[in-house]
Each structure stands twice: as C-alpha cells, then as structure tokens.
Amino acid sequence: MNITASMVKELRETSGAGMMDCKAALTACDGDMDKAMNYLREKGIAKSAKKESRIAAEGLANIFVDGNKAVILEVNSETDFVSKNEEFINMIDNIGNALLKSDAKSIEDANEVKTENGTVGEYIIAMIAKIGEKLSLRRFEIVNKNDDEVFGAYLHMGGKIASLVVLKGANADVAKDVAMQSAAMRPQYLVIDEVPEDVVENERKVQKELAINEGIKEEVADKVVEGRIKKFYKEICLVEQPFIKDSNLSVAKYVANNGGEVIKMIRYEVGEGMEKRNDNFAEEVMNQIKGN
Image (cartoon, rainbow, N blue to C red):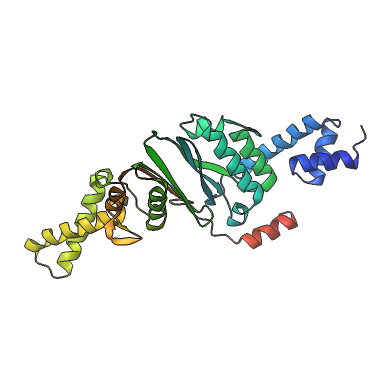
C-alpha cells in the first residue's frame, strides 16, 4: 500500500512520534492507522524499558478536590525542563482527575485506573515514547473528609511542593493558611505522638552529647536536653510550630482560636529522598541529536 504524506502527518499529529517512525509504522501495518498507533505504542514500551535504570527525580506534585474527596499525587520526570512541558502538566491533570474518581489504594491499583488515554499505566508509557524521558507516578493518596471538615490545599513553586491538610471545624481560609504553613516550614509529622520513639531517642542522644561538649555538667544536661527536645518538636511537628503569620501562636492555637483542629496533613516535595541526576543535560541532548 502506498503510504501518503497526509497519512504520515495524521499519525504524527495523533501520536506525537517522529515522521520516520510514523512512516515505518504505517508501512509495517499496511496503512492501518489503529494498528500503526499500537505499533508505535509497542515501540514506546521498548523505549521506556531502556529508561527504567534512569533517574527520574524531577517532576510535579498536584492536588485535586471534588466535594468531600481529594487526591494528592507526585509524577516524576528526569529533567525539570520536561516538568514545564504543557503535555506533561496535562497528563498530571488527567491522571489526578481519574484517580479522584477511583478507590485506588496502591500504585498497582492506580496504573489500572482508566483515563481518556487508556489506563494510567498505558498513558504514562505512551507519554514516555512521546516525550523521550522516563516518567513515573511515584506516589498518591486519596483522602475523604466528613461534612464538618474542610480541606486546605496549597501548591508552592508551581507544584514542586504540594500540601494537603484536613481541619475539623474552622473554615477554608484557615485551612489554606495551615496548608501554606506545611509547605513553607517542612514539618515531618502532624503531632508529637506521630514521632517514632527511635527518632526522639536519637535526637536526645545527640543533644546530650552536644550539651556535655558545651561544658554543661552531666547532672544538669538531662534537663537541658529535655528543653531542646521540646524545641525539636516545634520544628518537626506541624501543630507545634510557631504560626508563620503570628509567631506568638502555635499552629494548633491559631486553628483552635478559629474553632478548629488539624486532623491530617500530607506534604509532598518533589524528589525528596531520591537520588538526583548529576549529568550534563545539554550534553545529553547533543548526544541524542547526533544519534548517540
């Protein structure tokens, strides 16, 4: 079958793949557009498999809310450049809205959730082929609230940090203030009771050694350490932190003054805890242009 330029153009516009790849796919599939699309997607799977060892620690986080249900998610890319790509941003929107309608509890569940572009897993694979970088849904959480509760959602730096909180009582403005606090001040836990005992004991050990090295007598050091542990809690626990808009109040006190209580916090910072790329991206692009 004769493969025309208009056929190649149509497949290229639909798939986002290169012109020569589209021509090869149409030739291999005797001009059948649907089969050619599958051919390219299968080729994309092969390409994406080669990228599995690559580091994808950039990307974006986002939050989607519908009534009493919300979802927070992080989708990673290899480079910050791609995280600003409109198609990448649209992909996150589509995945987020699909997850919001689901009851997925794991990444495996999420990858089977249907979107307008196939399942989440299929959609990501297709976008890997189109964009040319390793992409992955790293994590998400679906949160349900009661009618007497309110969501607070805040994105910082265009989605490099996302914070979702749930308050019982209070109002949306107070909840947003708390979400902003969470984004800005990097709390690791909501309340003191959530802090693992081994984390506290390690900090206590460090602070005691520090106090003794500062010349504080050992019989006094324990009292000094307990004071420093209280300060430690104010750094790592959201409700114990000084409120950013009024440092005379703790977050808990600010919320209580507005008739509420913080009952949940989820904070995603893109790439936290992941190894970062340290290669030269400009050099990589040149290598790709040269066909290396």
